[in-house]
Image: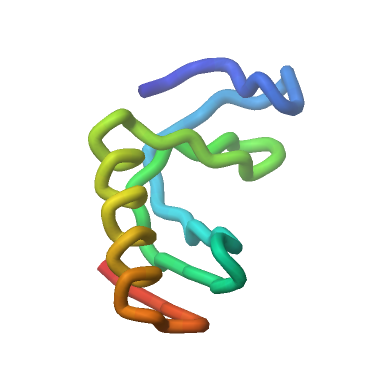
Length: 74
């Protein structure tokens, strides 16, 4: 998905990889090498609907496993 970045308004996105991190329920979850459309100017990452659903599932699994810090690489 190529688009103009809504954050910096000057860059455009190109397919790449990024690291996704979130703090939820007192836990830190980091997922490396996630497919994303990444802005070539500011680095903002945009995820497809499928990737967003997958990330949500992985975050919930990490919380269910009671991990305080979870680092995943795909």
